Each structure stands twice: as structure tokens, then as C-alpha cells.
Image (cartoon, rainbow over all chains, first blue to last red):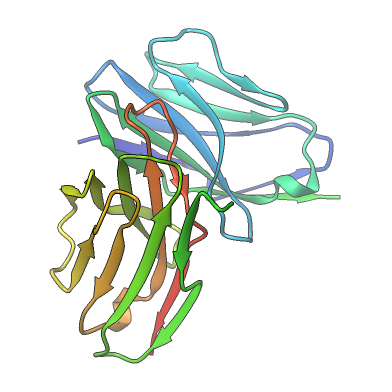
Length: 115
Length: 113
């Protein structure tokens, strides 16, 4: 069975600084996708970034980038120039390519950005 | 304009009651889901439907019955509500292929008293 682990229940960072959220996953498969979702206090689930496992290049979306280490099964999220609006729960998620009906989430990391 | 809309936003009810949560998506997606987010914020899939056909049922009690009248709708009916059913329920949809992310509704906070 596939599992996703986020070992940091809470993180904090000062505005304009950089923070990295950790995620590891476990699977015996080689073809999958990884995502980071953000859930602000409004409760919406918002896609932050995604990574295809077959791509070696790390995905980047503006201030958000990932460090994807396939061999280590690690998928960390780096937020640069943190903003107050980045305060949210962040969820790492995983889906197998041949089983695209089941997105598995980690337990989440609560990020607080301080002014 | 809302892509995935679910109603109601909040639902407060007593134990033993039966309630429904409705979900509609206007994205033309084939697959729809229900996820449950517990008090610790853990998100777990409950059901997925593809073109009105049940694909995943994650050992959810049979008090929970999803119904998909067409591929744009996936409603969740819950019988004999229990205290432990209190949670936020998210509807989501996705097109074919796992690289397309799920589009979530804004969630329904269910409180059972």
C-alpha cells in the first residue's frame, strides 16, 4: 500500500524568509505523480505544485519549488519569499499512474508566516 | 462560475438523523470523489465515481450512500448519523489521467450533536 508521511506537524517562518516542508512517500511503483495542496483557513483545497515521477527536473511555480528525490522517495516543498497569505495547512499527495482514482494525502503541515 | 460546488456549507444535526450533501461540477470531468477530513485535518478518500459508476469504496460504513444521477453530480446521503461522522466532507472532480489535479469543492462542515 502507498503511504505519504509529513513529519512536521507545524512550521513557522518570518515574512520574506524561505521555508521547506518535508514529505516522504512509500511505494513499490515507479510511475506516479506527486502534488502539494494548500488549505488556508477558508478551507479551500488549492493546488500549489505537481511533479511527474518520470521527470528528473524539479517543478517550479513562482515562489514555490520542489526538491524531488526519487531514490529517497522524498518530495519537499520550498517556499521562497514567504508571504502572510502563505499561512495554511499544506498537504503532500500521491497518485499512481495506473490507478488514477485514488489520491493519497499526507497528514499535513500547518505553516504560520509571521510579519 | 464555481467549478465544483457543494451544498450546504454547514450542516448541524442530531444523532440518528439522515442528511444529504449535494455536489455538482461544471468542468465536464468524468470522475468525482468524496473525501472526509477529520478533526486532525487528515484527508481520506471515501468514494470515487467514474461516469456514474462506483470505482472506489474505501470501507466506508454502509450508512453512507453516494448517488450519481449523472456524471456532473455526486451526492452523499448519510443515514443514522453518529457523533463520529462530524467532519468536513469535500467533493472533488478530475478529468482522466492522474497528472491532472483534483478540483475540490469548498467543503461541508458536518456537526453531529
